[in-house]
Image 1 (tube, rainbow, N blue to C red):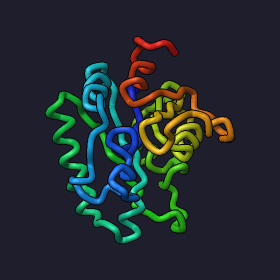
Image 2: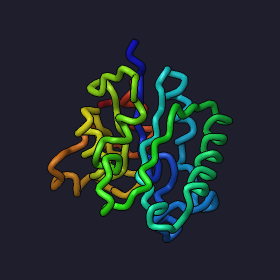
Image 3: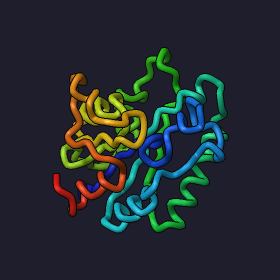
Image 4: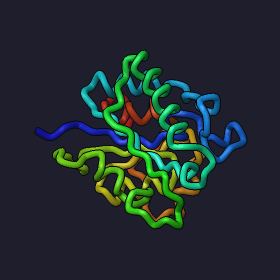
Length: 188
């Protein structure tokens, strides 16, 4: 049986991009702030039978700006809030490498997708990846997902997308609007 998966970036999709706090990375729970409507959108996906997988580059760990344990502490608190709002995250995949490490997992490469779905049958052509950057859209396209760029993170309007070699399938304001595309109820 093929499971229904949704892949999401974290910063700029689930929570505010750390630039809101004048930082490059979310290094503590105090830096983490859910975007408006995110908890409801995650509950909606959960209620509609989707397995939600978070796919996030977290090079700050590799750069020594925060620890792996600190990242996991932030994740645990994030999961608690999501679950208390009725949502459920199936899996979280982090790449903690720096760009120069040339690993297989750092987006736009697809190692985190493959790791999350190891030994599971997934039809990526019927699966969405929601992200807030060019790198996210390239990763989703490379693995074969439909892609949705949200304008709630790094990219604030869709104008620069015109110059990208790989375009998103959809551009939406935020996760709540992206979820409407996926489960219906929005003009697509």
